[in-house]
Image 1: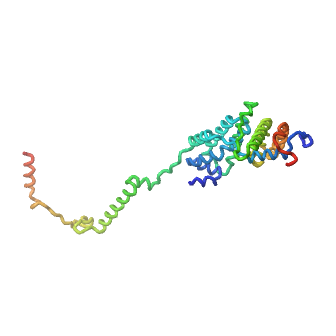
Image 2 (image 1 turned 180 degrees about the horizontal axis):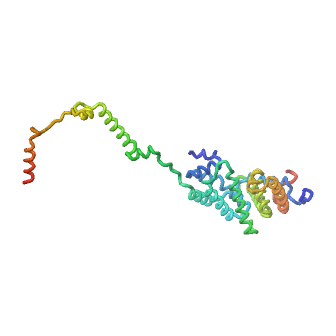
Image 3 (image 1 turned 180 degrees about the vertical axis):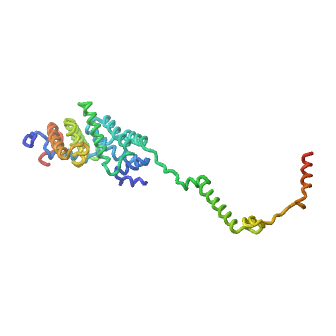
Length: 128
Length: 194
């Protein structure tokens, strides 16, 4: 159809444009609330679960020792042990003394070579 | 994320949020896209119940494709319109000669009763005339002159060239003017005043 074919009874193009404009700018065709709820229900049902990042190596280690509190205790104990190692309290034999065999030993028995007493005690135990 | 932030987000960014499990993004997308798709489906099919089926189907396809959606590659609304257009075409092929009387146009509460009636008559006349157009012409006219999309976007939706869209809309408008001839007086557009 060309312009010359247009029927004079047809709605003219300006009127048609006005009609289309009215419809376009007019109130939109709104779906009802029940339908919107159904679409949202579908959306939530199809939604992937939130992805959770795997724990880091550090997080795994701290969780083994009981979290940051456990890790704190472990660090404190390590520091204390290290300090005792390099600066031991008086009377505590050091590895160095042990190596030179110069450590002092204390016996609570009157005569540590008196094995008889100990054996005698042992016999007593056997005889009841 | 605050609710206002979703208003400024593009559709594809919202879809990415949706894929991360953000329920608010699901709500925002539903509210933003469903009425547009539904309106297009009603105009195409002339039946609200069928339009609901098509809209729900199209939106379901969007939810399913969301995890694989590549941000920035395609426009979500264009993709959704294309899916809807294809679903509508399939339905129309299966079922011809739909009754148009059950298409309820929205009521605008602000104008007077007379104005409301005239608006209603115009909407009904246009809807009736639209149903007389071939499917592709109807799609092109609705997308261009009612949805207000640009020709290149319509070309993507209908998977044809921009020139073909121009041709379709021009022929569609002429056919529409012809179909509206009987309702010319009822429409109330004084030709001399336009």
